[in-house]
Amino acid sequence: MKYLTVSALNKYIKTKLEYDEHLSTIKIKGEISNFKKHSRGHLYFSLKDTYSQINAIMFSSNASKLKIYLKDGDKVLIEGKISVYEPSGSYSIQVYNLTYDGVGDLYLKFEKLKSDLEKKGYFKIENKKSIPLFPKKIGVVTSNTGAVIKDISNTINRRYRLCEIILYSSQVQGPRAAETISNQIKIANLNSEVDILIVGRGGGSIEDLWGFNELVVAEAIFNSKIPIISAVGHETDFTIADFVSDLRAPTPTAAAELATPNSKEIINKIIENSKRIRRRLYEKIDENTIKIHNLEKRLEVSSPKNLIVKRYENLKILKMNLSKYFKQIIDNKRYKYEIFRTSIINLNPLNIMKKGYSIVNQNNKLLKSVKKVEIGNNLDITMYDGKLEAKVLSKEVKNNEE
Image 1 (cartoon, rainbow, N blue to C red):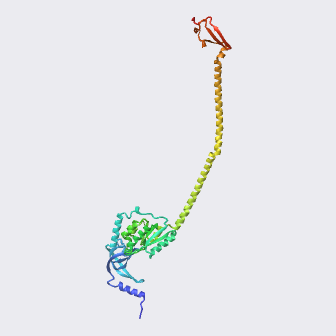
Image 2 (image 1 turned 180 degrees about the horizontal axis):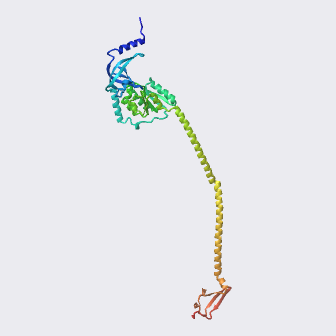
Image 3 (image 1 turned 180 degrees about the vertical axis):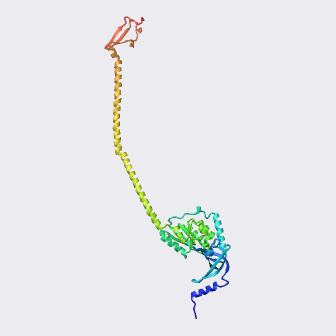
């Protein structure tokens, strides 16, 4: 009994399939999924309908002739042949020609929901919340069994071990994915125990990622008080969750990097801040040293001892000025006194009477005119050294008056 090698079997299958007249040129329609474009221009994708799918490849020589831009969800008509890759025993359709056959239902739903939410303002920048620089706790809404939570945990632990990770386990694929994703976002907000939420999963077809294109997930993200970073699929995958979230990361690993500061950056920042603080401290010391020096000068000037000395000097000056003032007043008074004294002396009747003058009274009244005197009247004459009593024997009036 003869046994075939694997290579011989695959070669036989390849010959049968590629040289079958019914498979050498086939026309088939379906919906594109898992679309990828190679750097060399080759197109790789799956062609599927409701029940089955088959891999397809379109080499750059034919792909360069396309006038359309392909994406997941496009319904297409293709012409090609069956091709077998012997090393892996896999088969696919090698596509020669490709045209549109309408747009996939999922893509239409995606575009309609995106348009509706955009009109409602779900994508506006002013509605985006800022991501904290130094979070204490990061929540992750994803599957507890996938590679996503491991990648995120490894990245966060490598970059920022001060942060705690809290997993909100959720289905990320299938009919209940959208419901569980939105519920876990709501639970995280009710608990208020995390600073950032990362919502995401790994790559997949448009069907696999569809849970992140549902309205309930978009509303949960938009109404979240916690900033949300979306991390759904690969860099080329975009979902409604990406547009609504506060920040979109191309991959879950990138989301973990965006949610955490780099340890090296933190250390460099600490060193930089330390230098700046030290420099500022020295500047402050210099400023305060100058202030103290100035205060010492001011204190010296305004010290009680100096004030007393200054007041004492002022007092001495005041005493001298007061003494001068009193002397001047006394001299002025003495001068006036001498003037008054001289005047009094000069005006003293006694002094005048020494010169030979006398005062004549008649009946105790000062006699000023001879007209008041009659011959025979008695008069009292006061002289410098005594008094006389006299009797008028005659009188003479000047100007020939009696």
